[in-house]
Length: 281
Ligand code: NAP
Picture (cartoon, rainbow, N blue to C red):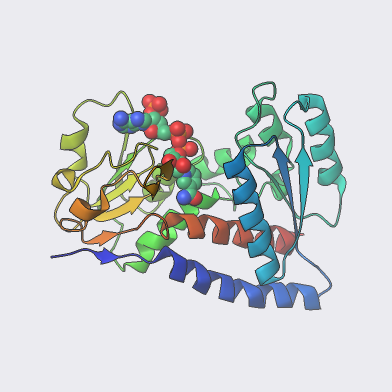
């Protein structure tokens, strides 16, 4: 039976509609939620991502500003800008678009953002709280969107075998922690994993966050599995996911498309985190 396609674009629209009301409520109490985005360098993909974030903010009524810095920016100067935004009472969320140029330590910059403005949730404090299951941290946007999409299928996560392929701090690791928090039995795979095919074949829930177009094919997938394809690689054919859509849709029970799956949810979750930051203030 062909998989049900999880429509991330539609779900993201629904989320944004809900957020508009939250923004109105905040505005009526005198707070205009504001996101500051810092973009260093000329990477064309990053420029597109940042413009999409700016557009999405304006659509729900969040104020936003983009600080565009040259690729030779020094770490100290970026730190100074972050410090200035940390001190700015009108700024509720700060996002530093990754990747950063080689001369700048991502870790130093992400950790310099005040935890209560770290709407990407990538700083050590928010990530540490997430891992410990402590308090109410900002959860990284892509993994948060992944869990939301899995929940829209109505399948119960509790007790299921969830396999996450990829262990980055941005996607794989936090996605695995969130699935664990939902009581899945979680396995994390990476480039040194042996028997990837065998492990994947046991997944009731499969999250592919690799960056290798169509690495996962239908024959590897368990019949009826929920498959979330995070991969987005620009190839001659356009944007491609990590999952071979055509063969996977014959085996999976649920499947996200690329584009139109996880991507729109990432932005919706950024808006959600920014509103949360403004509400916490
Ligand atoms: P990343 O930092 O490059 O991590 C990729 C992960 O995949 C690594 O853990 C790597 O293992 C693993 N891997 C590489 N080759 C593998 C193989 N042959 N078998 C098994 N595992 C393998 O990438 P990322 O930032 O997590 O992003 C992953 C993909 O998601 C990319 O295509 C990216 O563009 C996309 N993405 C999409 C969104 C969205 O909003 N749609 C957001 C973020 C990322 P090692 O750790 O051993 O190297």
